[in-house]
Length: 200
Length: 381
View 1: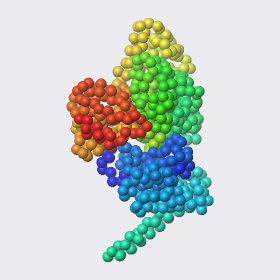
View 2: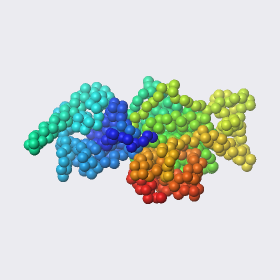
View 3: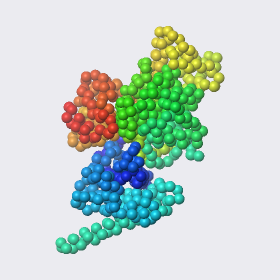
View 4: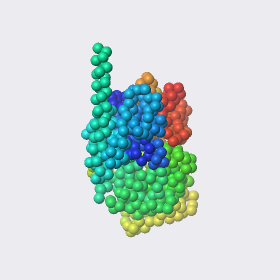
């Protein structure tokens, strides 16, 4: 075990939703993309037992540039909520400057007073013909908004992790989510530039 | 078909890495009975063993699973099983048989919270004392404790190597968190993996005695069916393996079984230290708890407390002498484990009153947090 004091990157991520939405797969794709694609250290702790089959489900991913000792999320840099129950359960763990991303049709962040990202990931997946790809769209959005993974690693790991024959469709879903995330960032930049202009 | 050694970089769970380590070690028999959180070890072995010429058998229960493992090993095949608390209890009888018959085998315990059925999907380290003497009678045993998926891969290989070298069951005492957590696992080339096999007979078939120890205390082993006369029994036996119901036979058999460990202790014991050279407070931990302990040691150092970590890789045998010599110079010990004080008692015993030893324990079901450990480090002394 190495000294963990000198770390520069240490991202704690929670993805949450119902069992069956592919939350655990989303966690695995993110952890694997970080470890094998981006050559970072990563750990994935996933829901196990009844909750991964219908109840409140979560995946905790830590990505670091040095070895990870304690593998549970102590306070989250990123929370991606794909259900109201998941949002309610984990919002308290999000850091004050942490990034919140919600599936806007499935989780309403009542009382959350900072800026957050709302993406209709399930609706977008339905439009692509498969509701079950909402998790992949969400990974695309997380990748674009947070920079936790490189685009290449995330896209490749999505392609490597989904059932044979569905790679193309899933990569398309990933790109949709990624584009959505980029457009959110762009509109924020515009807004920020506008405000600066007004002050000066 | 995939090869036995899956050389390359993987992202897998501890349970999967455990199975891959066993396959890399040459394991060709798994006698199993699935149980959470060890099921994925059995699942992976059932998928992989047929492809490498091995055999997977699901038995009717854990008693039978362990019996099958002992039998397969007697026939010359590297054998293992994997279970959790309730199954570990059932396996105890035949683990004792393997100890008494000096049969190499590997038993993985992916620990969950107990007692009894406990919390099936949540981790603990409550079986550490059961690992020591859970089967009846007096004996020594080897128990390893992995902290990560990568380490469990290597410990699976180590477990087979130690079990074959010393003709003893070896226990891998992991837990639900390490078992189910995914991490990077790098599997080296097959030629870089050093494998050990049981010592083979050095004398002719007429003169061979299956329990006559060589100089290192370990008796060469003939496998069933090779033409050597062997007799295997759980009764007290002589060097030929025949039952002898006398005090003398008991004393000499016990001497032989204990000597394997006494004579080879320095080859068996394994620990890892971190910042211990100038440490005033030594945190002792193992398995998944050592990850919490490391985080707490780093936090303590940041606050100017000279803390260090002694991580037990072999929990059994226990490094008593090392603790004893540390006790002479440190302020004290803190043992971090996911039970309410088991290895803590060993640290206390070995410290022998020369330094105080405190516990940072947890009832199980969740990891103890680094903050809780730091609290004991800061306020215990």
